[in-house]
Length: 316
Length: 300
Image 1 (tube, each protein chain N blue to C red):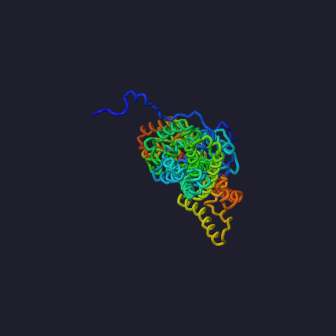
Image 2: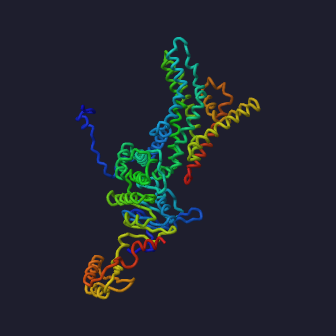
């Protein structure tokens, strides 16, 4: 699917993970969300936008923490405004802001959060051990949170969001403030949630790579509006536009070699645009034609805008 | 080298292999009352310093022990020298006067414990985390109020119950004493609750206004002690206007609770109705502050 600025207005449906219809939220004179309509089914969806685009507001509305001024929101088939209690028991939430009680241990906090979500004491203790192990805090579980690094605090926030076995976990800027290695670890953990542990993920970030590495679909917000949404693999497809080949050598001979293989070659964008076949066949054809014509490849990438180009443009 | 510890067989019996992989939880899920109970229990334990360093525990525990002191001393003297002195426990330390004796301790205990319930959550931003569960602001507040009142009963009610139990033990006819004085039990419970609700709600109301414990303690003491000092000064100035006792906020509930005990009612300057009215005004004001701070969409 091409990145698109046109979103078909779906009716909220129980069949979808998240469905919103014309959601509006204003804070005084500021319109944080302006008619957001979404229909999301992907196991992991990234909410992308610059600071102030409305990501956190949308997440808080999905959790029922903030009431929209207009529009409807269904999460897991439940009306987020009318059944907030039921919904929050099925969701996990990792806030962006500092929110951890500094004078508690990670274990005590996670047990307490499990109890608040309805787990009996014994089950809460067992679940806390499991999720703290999963996020890599089993050794530090008895330390006070005030002694934790930023990365450990982020992992504690993630653990409390997972302890009650949510169907969907909402992660607000999970890599915020992390150093490169901490960020790597957090992104690996987030990817595991949907790919191995079977928990649907909605992640917000203003960092493009966080979304492309961990999510299957993306929603881009700008100034409170959805400017594009869709599955990443569809956005990344090259078959429609072909490949752009930049090379040194005899490009006419290279084009002829491509033509002999049934591929269409045309000059453009400072190189040769190759099209006319599925992605794998295109790559094989370029390799063979380059070898036959003796050119030196300098660059090989999808013709037209890349996923990054499209998303960066959408982000504005 | 000799081996120590349990025998190999015992160790094997105690051993448990636990799979810590992540799994979906499909067990029992309790209602929101359980969540309120969890907030109350954690709050109460935190205010008493549980799972924290000894410094956090020392002051509340010391104050509880001091509150028990009069009962323990009188009962101890009765146990050691009762036969020689012929001490009458009900005369030596009447229930009606107990709370007045330990009034300062109750005041300090509430001042130190109640900020622990709200200030850290406000300072650390933890309220947002709690509200992301199914807990509402009202349920959070209910849990914290219960968590404040329960420890307060350790100083407002339990010492008098200890005294009552001690008297029963030393009575020649405990059943007869119980039959004649059973009415003291609901009076003790009532007096204990009156003080706990008053100091607890005032302490929580002040604490809801700040994330700094020191400010909460200072504000609480100022709010209760300053009018009491003013009341004393005005009484000195105008001479014997007993109604001024009603603005002595630090001892107001003690005067009210004193009316629960018939032997002391005559010694208390104002009527029970006057005390009840003043008590309700203060408690209602504290409750209003709390409800306002934790209203939906509020920043409490």
